[in-house]
Length: 304
Image (spheres, rainbow, N blue to C red):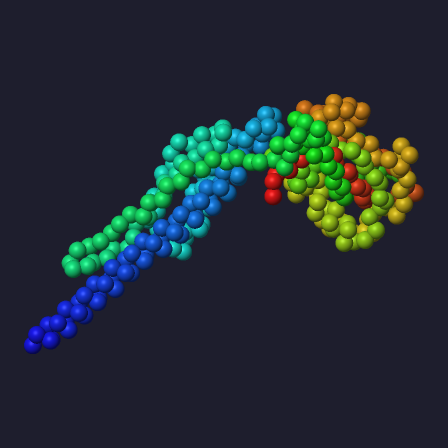
């Protein structure tokens, strides 16, 4: 009889041990998962919440509190949708500049019952994060060309298109605003200007014309949404065109007070172009040209 009770006791002890192991395994797994989620999401959300306009004006980092909270909550919810609910997020001491945040994430474990006692523990992770950056040329000698100026001058060339309607035998745009590439709209880039424009001729393929039509509302800020006729074909375009001003496309940089185009409004847009030309192909609807804009800018390079 005593061996029967001993066997039963061993079985109960084994079941209890397995329950305890599973319980602490869940706590450890939840704690590790939540910690790395908290760390990675905090960093990404702080970067997304950088006030770019403030950085351009002052050169200092600043985050927007509301944007950070929104980004963190959305990212955390998307990352934990498959691992359960019951999370509580507490934000403490959010400082916009210099950027610093303190966050606490609480997560409850599942209920466990051992020896008639119900166990339920909170897994708590806290993080204090400071956003800072190190420039590639921040700490250089006084003889270095980047001393007191950690920015590096660079250029980038982008292809643009223009498809104005034909009026008689004339085609062109008169002081039209143009957008800089999205790649240059970054917090570590400043002093973006048009350095040069090179005319490359007429669009000669339907594929390229389709690309030009798709990019029209992206490249030009004054184009109304859904105003582009995407059904235009290459047969609607003129087959010859002679540009005026020695075959050049004129431009203006408002950031340099480079006011040389009549009709431009620097209070609305920063970059403007102007071109005009004539054609003998007057039966067509429009003229489709392509040109390369070389952008000059200064970039603050980070340490890799």
